[in-house]
Image (tube, rainbow, N blue to C red; front, side, top):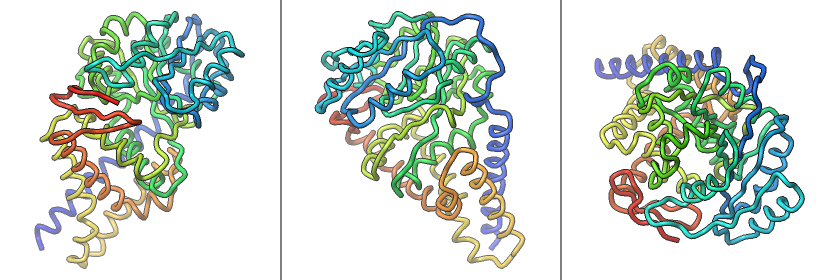
Length: 383
């Protein structure tokens, strides 16, 4: 019985930490939608979009970018060997809008991931002083670009990133995708990346990365992370190693993205990315999953062995308040977030096992490409 109370006590401690971290992020930001600064300079921004089989998304992405209140920008869109009508759509947009350039992607270079290879080609065509990397399945509020430049100017940032507000429609999306927000807003104080130099305090999302051209070149561009599947975090780690100023924001209500459309896409997409978040550190990855299992899932079963009402009430009050706050401020489904939380964590545990096994013994795949990963790098990439 004593071990039960020890586990429940540690579980309560973790939930308090998660709750307090969430409150700090919610209260103090940084949020992309909130920045008190008037621009002094208006540098040319090169907005770069790799697009592979994005016929359902690319028009919405381009329409919202064309509506930006920041005027000095170019849009470069690369068709990465799509098998649908993506090229026709971006070609039509380029013909109608002089600040949009359609680029036909070349072959996939050995040792490069598909996305990094596409970004390499986009950068070669970019003319701006500021580089903005985003995804074809995103959409944006009118102040997305201008607020990003304001943050860079006010805080003299080399690299900026924002986590989009995730659009979820199917039940699997509503259940699983909020885990991304749980990690970034409950396990990590966003301002810590700006003030703490250690590269372990590096977080980023490739759906919205903005950087100075000179800072990008100083890192060696995407060549420095050419074989990394989780290239966004790798870029920010490299930036912090070189003492560059980085900051990751909450992009809620400004940048929107729908990462996946089904359980199958979620399974393959997160299996590709989730292990890379820990920089392929197996002991750390296993430790995090053990903590999630023991102190988030097990309490639901351990309360069956205790009749101490105060212990039960304390744990679940903290848990419900934590998940309720995240759901309200980051636009999750409240019922699913609060009542199905342990099922989400269990799915993440199972998915993490799959990701680890794929890394050790198999390959990961995405959008028709398979990647075998060894020593953090893609050793063989093919279509």
